[in-house]
Length: 84
Image (cartoon, rainbow, N blue to C red):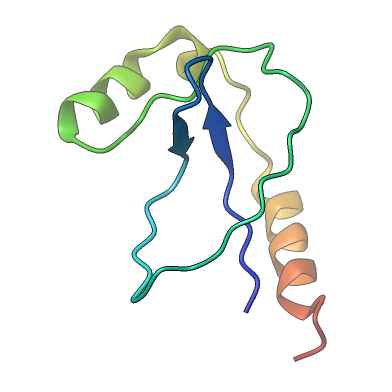
């Protein structure tokens, strides 16, 4: 099964996954390089202090509120996109 996981490759070559994965055995991976990051890297929310730092960050506080109706439309469209 193919699975896409976003990651950031640091200048030193270190690959930082943006989500945690736990494969049951070694798996192969293909890395596709996208455009360079122009924004600040996402804060790793691996612990409580990082979550608080994210919630108190200017980018989070200044983010526009989402429209719940349009979000639900997108969620429903994604749920049925595969025709399952």
